[in-house]
Length: 79
Image 1 (cartoon, rainbow, N blue to C red):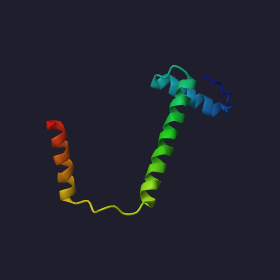
Image 2: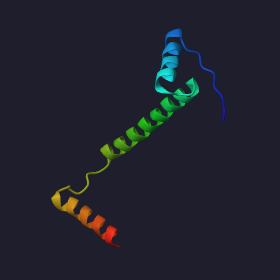
Image 3: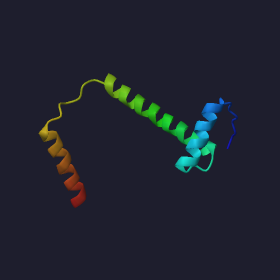
Image 4: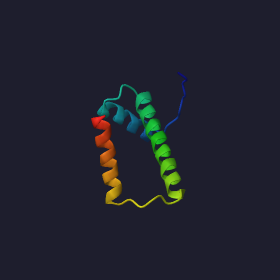
């Protein structure tokens, strides 16, 4: 694992320390790793949403569509 040193103003350092203490993190590194992972998740979700928004329209979704999904699940569970 690589290391990285960061500089924070006192107010941000105090906030990180407070989060570590009050939310059960083992260290400030653990807290920051979680923040970075959450940001990665947000970026992936944004990319998926943008891909969907720019994709061509799909077939309309109606009650028959949902019933076909239910029937498919029933077949898989019975199979």
